[in-house]
Amino acid sequence: MVGLMGVTMPGITPLSPHDPRSAGPYQLLARLGTGGQGVVYLGRDGDGQRVAVKVINVDLHRDPRAKARFAREIAAARRVASFCTAQILFAEVDGDAPYVVSEFIEGPTLRRHVREQGPMSGNTLHRLAVGIATALTTIHRSDVVHCDLKPDNVILGLDGPRVIDFGIARALDLTETMTRQVMGTAPYMAPERFRNDEVGPACDVFAWAATIAFAATGRPPFGSDSIGAVMHRVLHEPPDLPVLPDPLDELIRQCLHKDQQARPSAEQVLLRLLGYVARPSATPPLEAVLREGNVRATAPAPTYPMPNRPTMTIPVPTSPAPTATAPAETVRRETWPQRLRREYADPWGISTAVFLGLTGAAAGYAASSDTGTAVIAATVTFVVVYSVRLLLATALSARPGADSAGATPITYRPPPSPGP
Ligand SMILES: Nc1ncnc2c1ncn2[C@@H]1O[C@H](COP(=O)(O)OP(=O)(O)OP(=O)(O)O)[C@@H](O)[C@H]1O
Ligand SMILES: [Mg+2]
Image 1: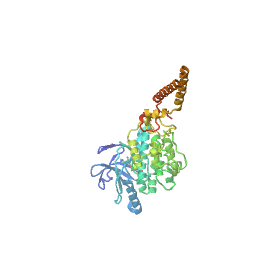
Image 2: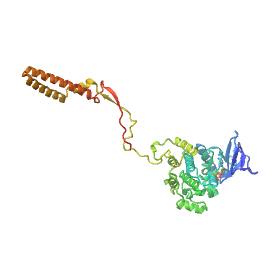
Image 3: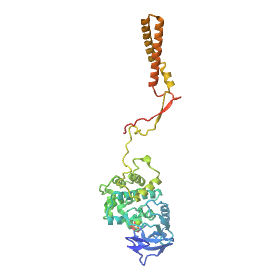
Image 4: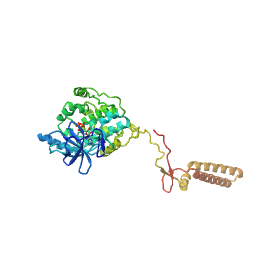
């Protein structure tokens, strides 16, 4: 461990006398490590910014087609946005030693972290899964396939996990890369890569699942003993996995499917991890999903799996939602003239007044034996009875008005109905 430009990292070693001191405009300061494709150096650009310089140990001059392919793939990889990825800043293809310059990420690789700190669980594991799925979705969106995702190519930076080296394995000749580095990579390689079938983004989804399984258990799901044994298990046997927390358990098993067509895409993995599957209509545009994935991978999550975003089907109410806040309806009440108009011709009121008027006439005639007195008694009784009933009925029979002309508005709020 050395302290260089403020970097104190395990695995970093001083330059040997045989190491180059520069690569193009980049000053090389120390070795970060050696992999199947070359040596990675800690470098410094013209502005004093730290970078990682991977000097590739493949002679591209001998094969113009390989060189063109390398240039094309690296150009595509340079367009990949930096959502949980280490951005590729520059690549030199024409010089004697091709090299690729990327953002320097300070932190241990996932492999080193698990070896030293043990397997991950809970929020930490979930954030890692989200971070790598976010990186893969970003990479695939630019039509790049990583082809070498594994715990060595994930750095646990200060601001969350970052995927490195995307596109480089594919940019180089795959078969050559395979023979050189297959021991570290085989447990994360999808069956189609061993079968020499067409290889696409689904091989990264398989590698995502194997990498997360490694993080959760400390061992890859198809073992790591010998290449032959690992290859046989990847091709023919089910993964050796403990029960993992939801939704990772089901996702990882689906992503490790032998048939690449049966695996979900990286985007589907990310959406499921973020809990959008139960609510497809609520899924925001991909750019927003990637931003959310980036934030979720870096910010501390509350509690596992994600209580603030339900991943189960949300029950659909079968009756109208509670209406405590239902919009108020405006109902108009009849005015006095309207009620008078309704009541003056009321047959029951008229009948009663006529009946009592006749009763009054009979009583007047019996008392006086005078027809005139009987008519007056009938008329007075009828008018009094009719008027009193009309006034009482008009006063007491306020109803919602049938038409609103001239009506007095009143506010009516329906009572809350019971929830589902
Ligand atoms: N962008 C980077 N930022 C910081 N460290 C890096 C970066 N890229 C690579 N490294 C370091 O360099 C080491 C060697 O990387 P390298 O990619 O050569 O090896 P590998 O990942 O083990 O194998 P492979 O060749 O399959 O990728 C890594 O383990 C990592 O520690
Ligand atoms: Mg690497």
